[in-house]
Length: 509
Image (tube, rainbow, N blue to C red):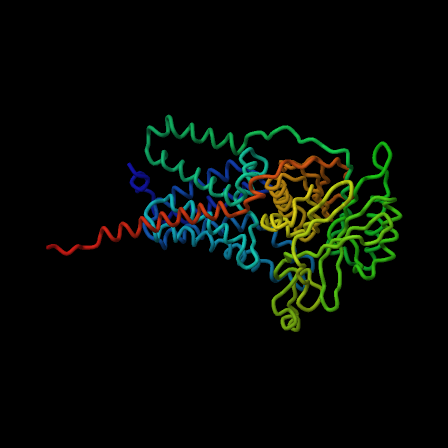
């Protein structure tokens, strides 16, 4: 008995409400809910509903509604940046959530539509869905936030990121969910034997424990968290207080005496541009007492403005500089910004004109005895391809960020999960300094070894973990997943052509 016949009594009018409920359930796999088992069950449910759809239109609507509900709950944090300056941007908040969720859901709707339009088998949804997720990571500068594999960072299955990356893991996740619809369609024998075994294996992978902690070096890294709320960060009566707070955290002795081997301040940690920050650097060098300091600030080059990271040596001199190259559209820059600015429309983080400019690309910084670091500024940690673009393999990743833009709940926790994904994919520790949190030392398996919670000023002194051997994904990137997707879609297309050819009438002799 097929699934379609088994569930024929289910009114088709219930498909879309059921898809919305499943979308909300799937979103609980993401932080702050962190229920990956519920997410996986929802994926199985949506594959079952997809099997019931007779037309491409109904299948596309199913995927659209499922995706819209999923992204609306996962990305609810997008409302927060518009409340920093509510008079200027508050009116945009509901439109941003609705339109962004709908825009991302269109990718999923497209996958469901294609899978039903060009093939009869439900298995085609596996490569189609994974394919649009791959597109979502690249097109229009990309926005792979809240991908289903992001929910697996605390699980044994999440370690698969080191082998196949996020898109390969999406392929496995969807393939497993689809496979479970096969025994479900053959009741009741499947309920007694096959389904419990399959579900048991899925739960072990999704909820299973991780390996023992990694070995640690003897290098102490200090992660500074000033906790400067975004609506106060640039106020003239507060900037000095926040600067002095970071100086105080920097000059504190390591427990047991001595100095840290590296001090990391967050993104835009000081209000002065690189060209005007000389006196501030002198104060920082005095507080650091010989320790190198990594911090974020803005840098000007003629008419161009960059969101940058600078490495200060023991004298407070800028030894190395990195310019953020993957900047946030409609946040750090706005297309046709000079024209739209005349009407009061500006990106939320941009200062003037078209906003920030993009740096030349990924680079590795030599931090001396502690090793080589790949710098990431905020949003760049969302993109695995940016990390894979490093010109050489670093010893660790440094992410500086200002998650005050994301509020005090959902956004910062999800952003931390993405940094943990990058650690697993590369087999590298991540040193993460966040303005308002969550600052953390992350080991190469994506585990948080030490951290400061949201909304707390302070610092963390943590031992730097050793890197692991280079992972398979760091060598191959997304090409294997893309190839498997293309093969799957090509097989589906070939079957459609074969069926159509065999159905054509033939001339008789």
